Image 1 (cartoon, rainbow, N blue to C red):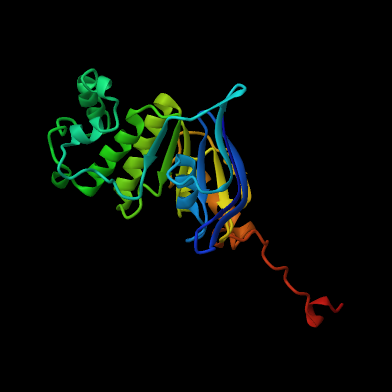
Image 2 (image 1 turned 90 degrees about the vertical axis):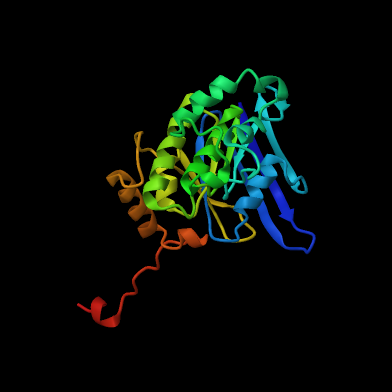
Length: 261
């Protein structure tokens, strides 16, 4: 099974071109991080893959064998987006098919325990901390057992310990069902700590300037020495990578004095 993305052009009605000549594929179970400068169209890309925006010149398809199919997609946004008038359990049930809701009541309670929220099903979002709300949103994204999981900077604005806990939880949930994950982040260290591959985007109109395999053993964290070393070597080789440019560092000029014998 392969998710294939081939976007020749994505432009808005005002003529602004967000994406141009962007192609990649994702295999089943592959964890891909997407990194690029602000305004590069990362969220636009996820919206196109999710089918929330269908206005593009190109194609997005999930293929299993010879037949294309529409994948089951989970989406975790920058904010938890929980319905404040519904309980935690009701927020989770929203994404389940009606016939599955009664069957999964017990399972929901078990899964809340799995994400560190035992006994919280009857609480409302306003009674939860920000980190607890993100745990609910993460569980909601996985509970439909998606083939493709889209994550748009899901741990932004969290304190470091909470973000670390959620990254660990994400990896544990991913290992259980192994969906293909597309994870947008501004943090290169976060990308390297989570992903099998990192796609680096150029500035708008965005395209892929580097498709980097991450050959580091799992499990790994953002503070691991191997992650830190790879992070440093990448930015040394491509100092403008996070600004969307792949140009190597300028060569040191040879002055008259240094070249004279």
